[in-house]
Length: 84
Image 1 (cartoon, rainbow, N blue to C red):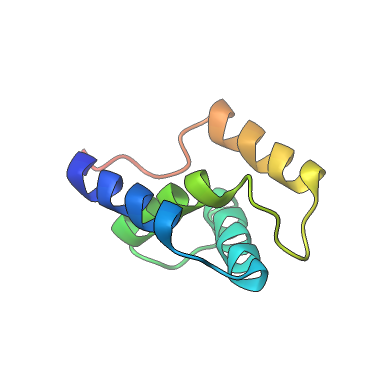
Image 2: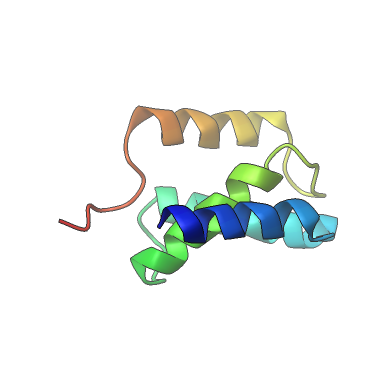
């Protein structure tokens, strides 16, 4: 996934997403970390890669505490099931 992930990082850095779209990415990250997301694992990985780039850009709904909570969850355990 390294090449794919690099492509996603580049896309996310260069794409001017609106504040509402950034909120959507954050909301999906929450669903992934809560194991409520029904997307296939590869799509979840893509969303988390996009979140990784965008999380420092403000949306409209979420504040610093929300981003800190997500970051702590990402550091504490792998967010996605293993492919093995």
